[in-house]
Amino acid sequence: SNTPKRPPTFGADGLLAAKNKERVKMAGRKGTKRFVDPCKVFLGNLPFDATEQDVKQFLAQNLGTTFNVKSIKIIYDWKTNKSKGYGFALFTDPMFATSAMEVLDGRKLKGRPMTLSQGKKKPKENELYIKKENKRILTKEEEAIQAGLEEALSNDDDDTVVMEVDDFDEADDALLFDSDDDDDDEFE
Image 1 (cartoon, one colour):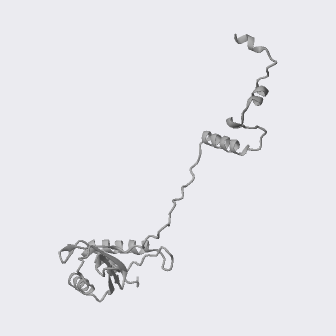
Image 2 (cartoon, rainbow, N blue to C red):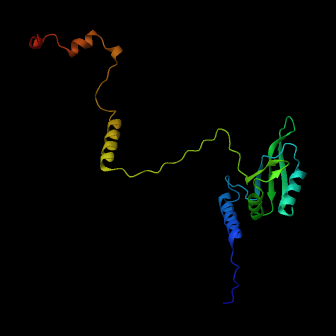
Image 3 (cartoon, rainbow, N blue to C red):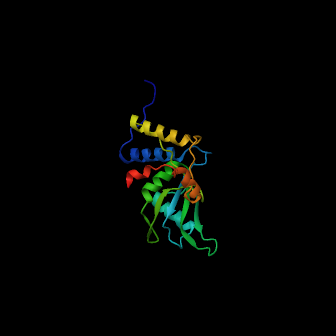
């Protein structure tokens, strides 16, 4: 066989590769509205006085290098210009992002344990997601009940006249109970 054999993956390498594959798969297709960049990592619980340079040094100390980091962005409040305590790191490859999340999650930067996770899209306001329910198969009894309900609802064109209680007066009472009948004697 002339095809070169791949070296087997063992232990943590195989687990890390599996997690990376899952993250890339969950990211979706690029260009779709639900796509989440697998190279972008959310950095949570940052110290409020941390700068982009502090985060870059932290990554260099713990990952060994920062050649795989494209950019670091800390989110600031627009009024006060103070850090909101979170940011994002953009890596050159999803594998670097996955390994950073595995290695650095929980490590302390300036005394605060950072959380690293997959970046997510901001949910849009006034957007409601409805889960479509799968139709289940009805039993014969449920089918009969459903058919009866549908028939009852569709029979609006019958000749039955329904009167409101407020519209009912003595003339209607006379029509219903004919005073000429003397059948009332039976109940005396």
